[in-house]
Length: 486
Image (cartoon, one colour):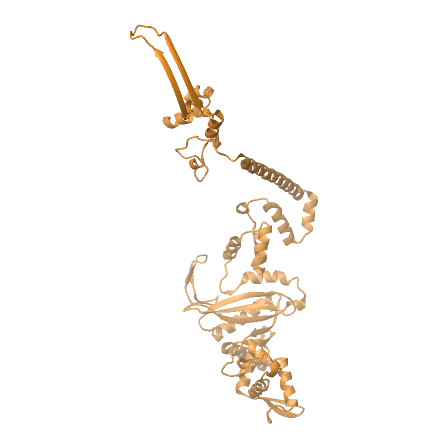
């Protein structure tokens, strides 16, 4: 204990308290916070080591020196002998002190009592509102808890669909807890993950209103799912359960596959304890660094479902042998769970064309060995016919690219005619846009000029073969506005 500081604090106490023992004062007596200035408080509102009470102290006249003006006249008669007694003392004094009111004003701290009273009333009103709000929320929570435990409510929840029942129970149990104190089951996380994957913005909005897991929790759930190259058996098992409830017409689907370019690189996979980034086809791996990914997806013809079921990593492009094996394995496994693949959809890359040609050739040879006639362009896998289809965007671009270098021969009303790329150039020259009026306002140099055509843009190819361009060409041909022989 600092004795010097203790004595300073002891001076401000009342006289009846000062007379008690120091041990009692030190352990039992407390000084109010209103007696300390703001400079004696730390950032955490605690008192500093050198804090001394200086505000709102009781007035002690003996401890205060007042400035005064004094006038004294003293007349004394004292005998020279030191044993003489004092006979006469006359003292006349005039003391002019400051008035007691001015002294009180000097001692009283300068405080705006009116402002303090207003702030105090405001704080009291705010505290009252918070108490009422807290009481109301407590009552609502208690009522909700009683409602959730009642038999009638439990029966009602049981009638709801499973996702709705999970969501209702989750809100009743988690909403009254702090965000960091909430614990979610795996079913609740999966339900929230479906909402999160539909729209991240919608999930952020719902998270402000309802008690939902954080986005970091969703990412942890996704990272806990192990996905390896090749056919995903887990997805096939889940599809097998879902397919049982579908009608036969919605079991018809197509197999779509395409490649996408990747940035090559190696990385360590903690959950698999292996290095990734090499060629991987599921059944086997190579030492080549992959820079492309091949993805297979199922798409319903009459239903709304679509589901990726396989992916592989390759360098440059998947070779025809591996691609052919993957297509056959996927068709066999998908047909075994109840779905029926009737077509494949892909682009016109050389590898895809070669694989489809080989599959069709194998089917023809099979028919020849059996002595039957092959009458379709489909290939067969386990006696199931699969029709190869090329995706329309690539067909549009392929048709446009061929028309730029070749003539298109067609027969109209028994007369053989030719369509040429020059017809589009003539249309653009005639439709120059005089008086701001054009027949085909979207046709530009980037659609017609061979050097300016972006060959990878599907939009430009689709606009060239649009209905408006066709109608404008027919109108100019009927009116003989185009050159003869075109």
